[in-house]
Structure formats: C-alpha cells, structure tokens
Length: 360
Image (cartoon, rainbow, N blue to C red; front, top):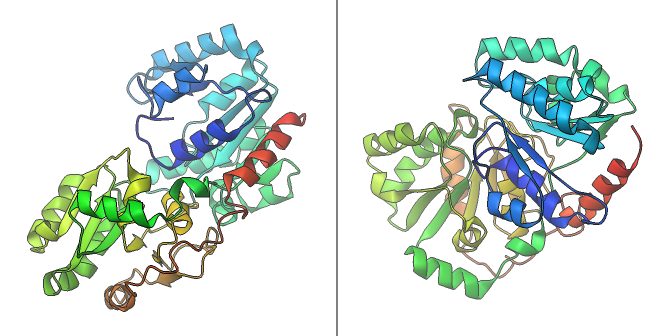
C-alpha cells in the first residue's frame, strides 16, 4: 500500500471491504508514512505499520522490518505481498526468516519501465522467488511469463486471482449522470475519459497527440485525465504546445472517480501494458464504451462495447475515427456482463477466503 489510491490499493481494498471479518483479519505493512484509505482501514480495526523507505534508508528499513517480524510474525498466518515487479522481495525474505508459514506473492503487472538496473534485479529475483514464497498468484495470465517465468504454471501453488470490483458501486445512474455533468460543466460535451497514473506506462502522451486534431476541430469534445503522477507537468506542457490545453482537464487524484464515470461518454485506455486495469473494469461496470490499446490481452474484457486499437505511429487516425464513430445514445448504458463474472468481487472474495483457509 502507498499513499496513492491506485490499482493495487484498489484491488486490496476491494477484498478488504468485502471479506468476512469473522474469517479474515488484515493488517497493513507499508514503507509510506501514510497510505491511501488510512482512515477507513483504522476505523475497521486493522493496524497500519509504517517502515522507512527502503530506497532512502536501506539499513534502517532492514532493521525495522526485522524488528517488526521478530516481535509480531507469530501473530500472522500469512503475508500477502502485492507487487508490480520483484525488485523488492525483502518482506518475503523476512517473513520466511521469522516463521510466517504462508508467504503469498501476487503479481500485478506484465512489464517494467523503471530502467535496466531494476529489470536486472527483477530477473535475478524471479529465478529465486520459489525460495521465499509459498504461493504464486497473478492478476493476469498474460503477465505470468515476465513476472515469474513460464515454468511457474506447473507449480501447484500457482493461482490466477484476478482483479475484481463491486459492479454495483459504479452501475449507470441516469440521474447521477445529469447531476455530475452539470457540476463538472460537461453539459453539451462529449467527454472522453482516462483514469490512470500519469506515467509512461499509461501512455497519455499518445492520447494528446492523437486526439489534438479532433479536439481543435470539434468544440464539443473534451478530454479528461483523472489521476496524478510523474508526467503531470510534461503532459500539461504537451497540451500547451498542441494548443489544446483548454480542451484537456487534469483532474488529479479524486475521491469521486466512481461518479465521474457517470458523466463520461467514452473511456480511453492507451496503455503500453497492463495486468488488468481496475479503471477499465469500473468503466465496463458503468457500461461505458471503451477504447483500449491492442497491446493489451483480452483478459478483463467482458462487455461487447470494447474496441482494441493500435498505439503505434499509424494508430492516431484509428483512435480519432473510433471516437467520432461512437454514438451519443446512452439507452444501453446500464447493460454490463461484469456482474457475476470472474471480475465481480463477490465472486472472487469467496475464492480468496477459500484459498487463505487452506494450509500452504
């Protein structure tokens, strides 16, 4: 858990909120002074332990982690480590050293864009991960070869545990849509929405470049970027240079994202790669038409209103055409196949509880 209410945080919290508290109790171990959803976590009776940053204070981090495990490891039946790469597996090492019997590693991404050194460390740890973890979970079958190596599939402790949401939280509500569009100043607009970190992986730069001609030509289109990240300043500068800054809203981190889906007309996900995007699942639960990059697997696609489009140099026109071709008719918006699917949290929480009740 970090301070950012991003994908992994949303995954964990969906299980946290929906699990039977008589069967499962969660505490949280983080290297951030504060984490997303902190008040909710503490209010539910769970603990949050903050360790120093491993990057900034590696020696202090190691000592504090070891001390925590020495004092508290006996209180826990399992440790569940959710990661986008295997650069830091110290939590698993410490858990093994201090006797936590069940040590779960859960993969949440299919590539790494953090540089060659981290890729090298990831590859080294990938070859040794079976020494430290007892269970190997993935949110995406597509991500497995890069994260674990193909051979992990034959391990009996390997499991597909997909990202899952509560479809009811984002189901389409026409009255709420009208209210949101009025509050946001979107009345009469065709709102193109992206919900993601502002990060090279998420490829918002491609959206700006591709949609700029359309945004300048047709005053009814409005591009909305929900989220924050290291590229915020760069993307704002790019929008200025493309002369579309007034047509692009940078909304930052929002507590009302589930309401914002109501006001959108299409959801755009041009990511270079993903595990399975939580915002993509939420957009489908809302019934939004979705345009996603063709670099992504078919995992997570449950509705018929999803189109996959190229994000290479030739793809810009395809995205503009697809946006223009979308109907403004919302009569079918409430229909979604996500309820009862593998991506419905009510289905997956039973799977999680069953797995955690088994001995490693």
